[in-house]
Length: 294
Ligand code: G1P
Image (cartoon, rainbow, N blue to C red):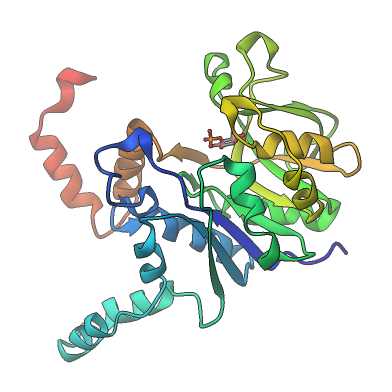
């Protein structure tokens, strides 16, 4: 049995430059899909997968993320006085329990690899999950749960991947696929933001990882890669010389909520999926007579 994964890391220091002006003062992770902030979806996905400790790598102007995972006594008292017990218990349900969150800061935007490295002391000598909260996944079970199943079987490092059209590969980390089924196949290589001609496949790294702690030593010495940033993909490619990496082509679909189209689409899809919203929402959409756009 591989060592259990108890800790998840959430890099939330990004500046959200693809979403200005919304993200000038508001952390992009607090943008809402229907009525939940993106970061809450990522935390929910991690809890469903059995994660017990939540590590946030934050930056300046990200204080409200910490507040979001704290009690809000004034609000709770008001809800209690007004007898809104359902809303109150929903709020409490979303909270990780006391002592189960940690916050550390990435002081400079040096890239994803550097953000992950900032969590090294908190994670210690343990395997950990890594979730990029911009990427929202709709799937049952959640993507990290699907990856845990692969981890329990194979151990080592697990990466969630998905197919994208060829012209989009250069925006992502891209993997080379070896033997095995979609639920767990060998990875034989990976490269960050390759030119289309140089991409080993159209399978991209989706923003969910299970990693072994040896990655931290490699990140400590990692030179800058694509975009002048310290890239996690480059350190993983090196780690692959000594450790197994397994790919999981997950079941479900993703929304890149760091970009406007993905975010708007996610809002529509999640709203249509909500029993308390669907009917009213469809009624309003019909009034808009959207037919001319489709
Ligand atoms: C990061 C990773 C990349 C991955 C992507 C998923 O890139 O470096 O490998 O495919 O997230 O969203 P970024 O979006 O930070 O440029």
